[in-house]
Image 1 (spheres, helix red, strand yellow):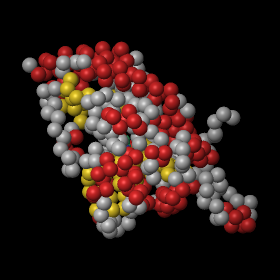
Image 2 (spheres, rainbow, N blue to C red):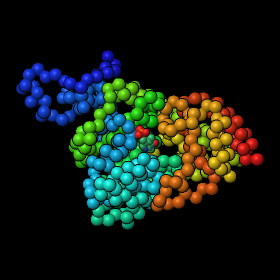
Image 3 (cartoon, rainbow, N blue to C red):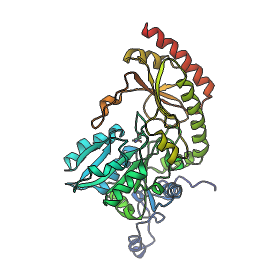
Image 4 (cartoon, rainbow, N blue to C red):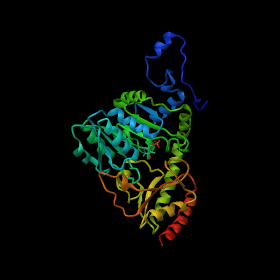
Length: 372
Ligand SMILES: *Cc1c(COP(=O)(O)O)cnc(C)c1O
């Protein structure tokens, strides 16, 4: 068979007591032990993700992207530690740090996503980890990942990257100096909006700790979900190329519209850190934001509600286009968001970009009526 079967099961039966004892000797993928340690369906997906990331020792799978992020932080932090998070972090990452980690005695401090090697000035005796996300959620600042990782490594501080936007395909994170790279596989890996999953890949130094923590926390994904994610992964390359081409076409079209201010797409010069994107990334994906000049909550709602081909909903990375009103001001503590217009985040799916542009053009008419 080309594909692994969906290998459902909790209990693995051993031939005899000697085999049962033998089974305790290895905790690697590839050995049946008990359902929580997976089956060939999950192992083959983890192996494929490891192969896509040069320098990787292994990949752990989690039932969501948020579980992947929180379990990775738990693997490297202990009470008394401090973690530095980019101010452009995905909001649930912030909540986990501000609520859960705080309760555990870990301090969270936020830094300017554009800080680069200046991060070293924030390191204190308790600083144990730096969380990066590049480009950032909602506002798409591209970070100087190599510079941040160099500074952290010199101080023996572990670096973690939320690499959901680029995936290892457009940003091979470990090669760029990152210790632990995480993706919400829910997005581009799965690619069809039908599974929640997270994946974390790391090198030798942190692999055993990451794996042990995930196992202690009981993290496991279903074989059915792993099958669908592996199926998605097979077309990742061609899907990403199409998301890239269509999103670029639409971002450039938006840039030429009189109603539009900033277009926050890493491949466009409006985007903070655009030069770093050119230097470090192998491509761009389908998610970006733009500013409705003079837009307010109500006119933005009129614009989004008028869209016929874009769904209104959370998540992204599937075949379908989505639009979302976003307000980064609410999620900032280390920096301030100063753009005066209203932001809209778009995910450009696999539809014909000309149809999507016609849909957006029509929505601008509703936007004007809502403003007058
Ligand atoms: C969606 C998302 C996550 C979380 O993934 P879930 O599978 O929804 O839990 C994490 N980081 C980023 C950047 C995301 O967009």
